[in-house]
Length: 318
Image (tube, rainbow, N blue to C red; front, side, top):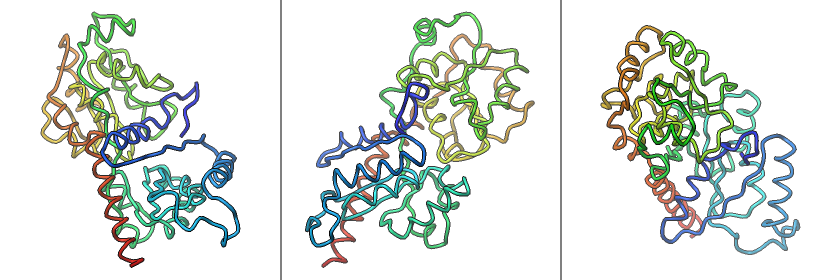
């Protein structure tokens, strides 16, 4: 998920987890990224083997792995990661790696070589191929960077983005080209409410907190979600959010007054949105809910899972 000028947002959630892991004590973490696509997968495998794998002759391989853990994000990434010697191999699936037919096959084929299997939500665990995979999988989300996503006065956010101050604005926090995110629903709601809708496709990640805080409400009417980071980003900014009950949405929005988590229906969503369009700076008490899924808290869960996996590996080798 290496970013490029057209998609600077790509892979940001993995980089956030990497930063959170590096901030924890007694961990030395290296990040390797590569671009999407089959040719890039092949190049990544070659580069990783050249960098970390050592000689191809078995007898001349290093007697001790270079890494305790090699942790891949997305099923396809687990294949080039096999080129890196490790005591424990980990994989986190995010959704698209299970839902695209060919990618699902590739992900299923690598699971036998994975010691620590994780998904970013309970709902996604249920989509893993095979009962054994579902039984052993952990839930290890990436989490929201609550230092970057925090409440900013709406007028200040709009001023920095050059947006008009005196009218309501809505935010669809995804690329409209991603069909499963259902931009069509968000657009229908915005038109019915007579409000302009902005989107986040190709937006610099550094500016995303400004866009969230600039909006009267964030709309997440997704057909499906592996996790649901956009909802947490809105909550971390105390910005009202309306979302469908997929991914982590139900758990995150429970008991947060002023939010909506319900199947998309124009009439009910329009009714829930209406109060937020009338307020000058509508807010909800969402930050505490977001903190439960902060990048730091989720990184601690990952680190603990690593330690437990290493302990199991030591017991087997002993």
